[in-house]
Image (cartoon, rainbow, N blue to C red; front, side):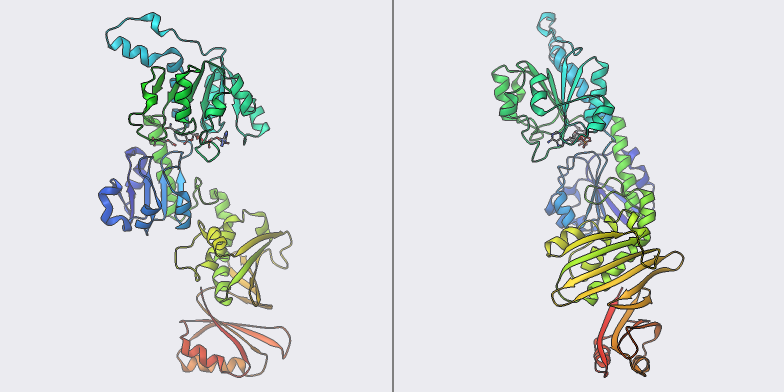
Length: 524
Ligand SMILES: NC(=O)c1ccc[n+]([C@@H]2O[C@H](COP(=O)([O-])OP(=O)(O)OC[C@H]3O[C@@H](n4cnc5c(N)ncnc54)[C@H](O)[C@@H]3O)[C@@H](O)[C@H]2O)c1
Ligand SMILES: O=C(O)CC[C@@H](O)C(=O)O
């Protein structure tokens, strides 16, 4: 039974696909309520309240996936998750509209002073002259970060007759032209905007983006909005620009610390606030919970996920095309690692023929994971394989060739060790399966599966018989046997597939046979 911990409040309707699956047990409790059983969960679903720290990941050794029902993953230690081989997914667009609408509600409330007027009337006052606002029509709106939410805010702003200016260093000219917005530099935006709204993630670059220096470049009387992440507008700098009257008003849905406690910003009459409500609509909560539940279900069923933070994204179509090579590559990695039982510096992979046209990132990661698996104690999979290879000083490269070299498709793997180099080539043949067609300089044809025994020897009469007799005498049945040689009387190999693995003693007996140079067990 798969166990999923849902540790933050989430829409039941959204979780329905998981709740309906009889093979899954969904536990809806806080982390602190299940401390004794953390090691039993396969998946963890969170919103922003649960902090997925390295410590929590260590306490959940069985965890395979963390699903964030929302956009921002700043409450998840993604690097640590990657190291532990845990996939992190989010729900990137389920709350876009709600957050754009909330931003707009905040903007209108800010310039018309609606929250202040509301409190006044509720206090039995009727002071119309105290709440004179300004129109949005004709004003210049500066949008910093023009992704999903920023672009939805722009659409609404245009409907209100605003002039929209956008700053986003990653926005392509073509996309900006298509949407029809004025793309400008940050300095231009700061100088022109009457209202500035931020919609970036919180990163090293965006932390304090609107701080002392940049706030000084804004127009006197500017309004600021942050419905993205606390810290993009530096709170300390903001206090000083409110105190000196440069900033006319601020709308905040998010804070550097949440809840903000007794923060000085809360005492300004012209600062309006909400408690991180951007995504708090029935629709958004159903959307994000549904997205994340469907993705987690797909992942647990071994299907590709499309919204992963730390895995290459794969569509179903692409996944179906690469699946066979993904498996072949994994097996090649496992075989190569056992054959090259020494430190290696580099793994070079060449994709030839039809496989060269596919999305190979995932295939390469699969090969690396296979290679590293016999060498590392911790979990290694597509999520962390590239990182672990790097940590262990193993460089890897991909090359592509349109020519399949006698095969419709092939993957050639070259492993450079300290003392030797090893090469193998594999191909996938539809309705036939995975075949290794070149091994260590020999043309051969075997399936990389089960208990394999590789023997390198001198090409002399009677060698096959000697090996067969010894195995037979020790009750080891040979399922298949492939042979190859470079030239008559020269070096030759046998690749045997056995019904059971060989023990050390039998390997030693085989190694002692005259004219046998190498004996390797390969378990796939
Ligand atoms: N208040 C809420 O409840 C709530 C809800 C949803 C999302 N969010 C937050 O809103 C923000 C935006 O979400 P989104 O879905 O639009 O994300 P997105 O990834 O679609 O867009 C982010 C944009 O920011 C741009 N960007 C990155 N670095 C930048 C920089 N240094 N300067 C300018 N632009 C930069 C990116 O190019 C991208 O276009 C995120 O921080 C997200 O966590 C908040
Ligand atoms: O879970 C929430 O309500 C907040 C979500 C929001 O901050 C996000 O980044 O998606």
